[in-house]
Image (cartoon, rainbow, N blue to C red; front, side, top):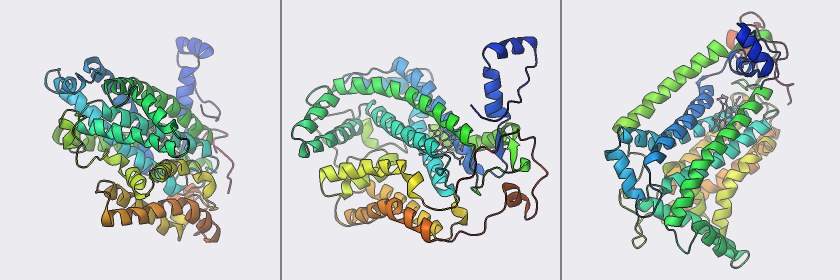
Length: 432
Ligand code: HEM
């Protein structure tokens, strides 16, 4: 996957035989052992590995759950209860999967904000970023359909509210929205048929995500990793081989993450969910407040902030679509926000806006809550469409270190340290 010169040396005749026919060990060695990694990466760079772990963990626990789960309107709710009570270690696997979805989103949000702070989306990493946004979309679709499966009240009404959004297209072409909703439901209301197709797609999508992640990591290995300075690798001393250095750091980060993960799995498994999902789905009783899972709340707040239904839907999808254009909306000459004295303030304002939208998404859509949701929705879009292009043009960045090594060791230190960066490892020409 990487474009640096291979340093792989088969250690046995068998390995040599294999390498001449299918050089998969070489690919792994060059991509994950000897790959030149910037020496100044901080712990925020461990989240890519953590996300890879989350994806595999969700697939493995999901496979086991699917062995016992019944995707029918009549049995789904009880089959989940049976998994928790009667299946050997079913409670643990189910908790791991349900808490795992939340942890996956915690990790992906940190990963995205890390990318935004350090300008990891800027050239030459645009495709890497766009693949990330596609992964994010696929993750949202997967989580949304997964939440339907326990067939509790929030599952049922969440599906009803969100699928109904498509009916707003009736305002554009009469009848089209309703036709799409009926098609999505597989009937004239949310029913067992809807649940069954959601189960099928929920099983499929993680493998699509897996494919996208492979492309994502491939693109990463072509461009090379960004780092807190945003500078490219220039000298041999700017990098260290991925193993053992970055791999060990990733292991420490993963371990810390797993402590928090385990805390929720074993002590607070239902904390991140909604109590109403312990009531079986009932089409005749609408819960007083229908709220999605916490990780959708900022987008839900944007949806409800706009007075028109179609406008709300467009704003909600627009809030994700705008991410695709970030590499071109940011006009700054430097990547890392660390060296951007003005933009830095706006970055934190953006973080506060996202948190505020998350808070407001869980509140009733009336009075002062709607007012503030509108204010923060405005800033959400203004950040990308006004702040990013304009601040990049008017701001004078702070003095950057001359190299990554200088950033770590202090001024005047260019070479020394570092462990054998292969020729061609300065992954890409610097584009400013
Ligand atoms: C299943 C979800 C994902 C997985 C498994 C994943 C995996 C990875 C891995 C292993 C890395 C390298 C290590 C690191 O920089 O942390 C990485 C880097 C990166 N990812 Fe992701 N990623 C995912 C989602 C996303 C999303 C949603 C975005 C953005 C919308 C994104 C954007 C990036 C960028 C820009 C980099 C390069 C960072 C840098 O070098 O500074 N990723 N990803």
